[in-house]
Length: 133
Image (cartoon, rainbow, N blue to C red; front, side, top):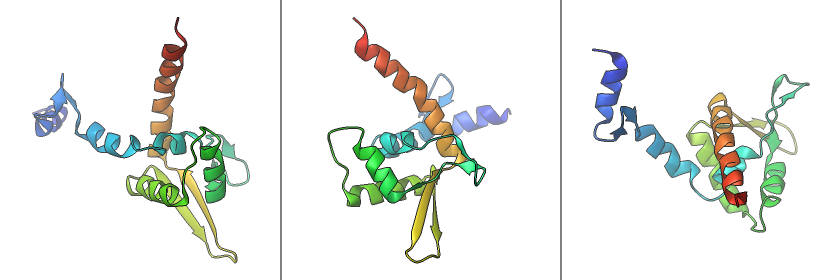
């Protein structure tokens, strides 16, 4: 039996037109929480020349960027919780350096970059839908 068909059958009854919706349900539970999409979207994708990796942000940079998006303010408790959740579902990595004072940097994983890139068309659609006359 075709492996894709086997995967879809394992998803029954949670599929539509042969597309398994279980992963969608799993990820939507996480990324639909307040602030999650904003946190994912604030990470720059350009390469950081000094490291040759995806741009990294420190906690304070993340908080400043997220708070600059809306008139609401994200609390430290909520931001810490959301960053931990993004780590748990492997969308974000956290690197702690053994320095004084301690330094922690966050960066999107390849999976996180894929999600960010997938969200861009949805965001563009919402902008067009909002400004349609």
